[in-house]
Image (cartoon, rainbow, N blue to C red):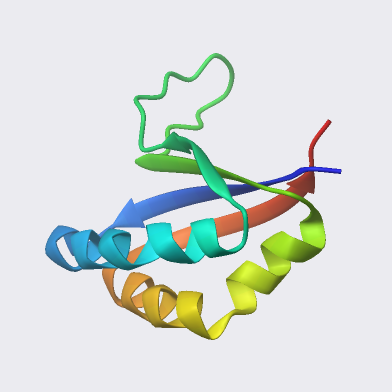
Length: 95
């Protein structure tokens, strides 16, 4: 069953975050993933949720998404992101 990775990002170092983005695409593609949403404009319909940046990724399944997140290739990018932004990330089964 496909899986989505949902990421809410608050960027505090935009220049460094651009470096993170350069490293990320190849790691996602290596694990059969793709971007579904990548920083598009959002509009709150209910509540006070107003994320600065949202990213949705799709992978073949939850385990593959977890393997991507823990991979040496993504760890390099992830460590850059840790220095450039604060993030929240979930993986969920899709339909």
